[in-house]
Amino acid sequence: MKNVLIINAHHYYPFAQGRLNATLVDSAVSILESKGYSTRVVAIKEDFNVEQELQNHQWADIVLLQTPVNWMGVPWSFKKYMDEVYTAGMGGALCNGDGRHQDNPKANYGRGGTLTNTKYMMSLTFNAPAESFDDAKEFFDGKSVDDLLFPMHMNFKFFGMTPMPTFACFDVMKNADVENDLKRFEQHLNAHF
Image (cartoon, rainbow, N blue to C red; front, side, top):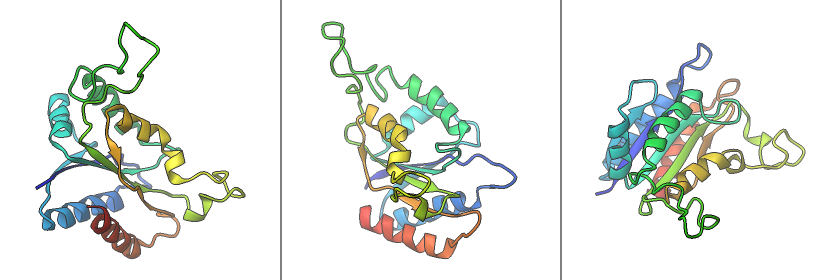
């Protein structure tokens, strides 16, 4: 049996109440538990205990980050979670400092991660349409979803984690296709878990 920590990083706004992110989390729990995985869900909108969150990350074989993309990144409440939990984890729970040593302080930055047997997957919800990515003529100048979320990939890499393919729902506010998104999400989880 493998353990999956699912983080729901949605932050409530009157125009974005988090129903799709919550539905994707519920769907992930259902699909993964039916496959024999053990799951834990953390909702950023609720209070969290730093020590418990460090234990959750150490327990997990896979961390699934379910998050909307707000202003080209994760919501501020998840950034707060990272600032508190991930900083506390630098003492060995998630990494041994930044990986460098006094005898060679210019080498091995970002190579101190202790979660080397842990994978991560990002599941993202966008207001942007899919067509705005991967096309040099569109808003993101030919960049991909993973290019946009490069800082998140680097945060997980800092802990020694290995990426799984990213999943994304697009155009969720103006042209949502929730039924199809949920089908695609199930296919994605079945293909990668």
